[in-house]
Length: 165
Image (cartoon, rainbow, N blue to C red; front, side, top):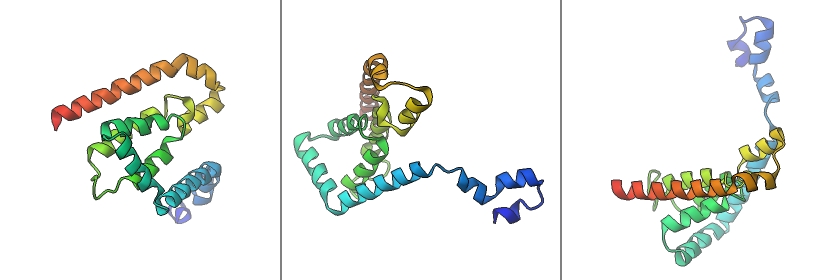
């Protein structure tokens, strides 16, 4: 299809536009990594481990405004993509609709929590490689600021949600 769509363009430009060229630029190791993560999360969901974890968190911590920031803190160590995927297996959409407090707050907490330690996000790991950032240097220079910002944002979100709902 791409070949037909771009057939009237100059040869050098047409070569860059074809599907085969686009596929050759895909970082397959990243694709395989995320497929592996999503398959592992699917296995945990199928084995009802995620539902059990959600029940345990509910019994232990009790409230979503405590559970969700805890999940966000875990995403500082485990990439935020599997944390969100796991959360989707833990909390059913029938109980927690797409625009509910859980999902909105979870998006903030896992996205921001992944930056508390540079290893909590794929972008952070990529930055470590590209910019030669050392983990301990990042933790010393930015760890405290990142966790203070994380909790300040979480408290602000909870306060805002409480005022609006």
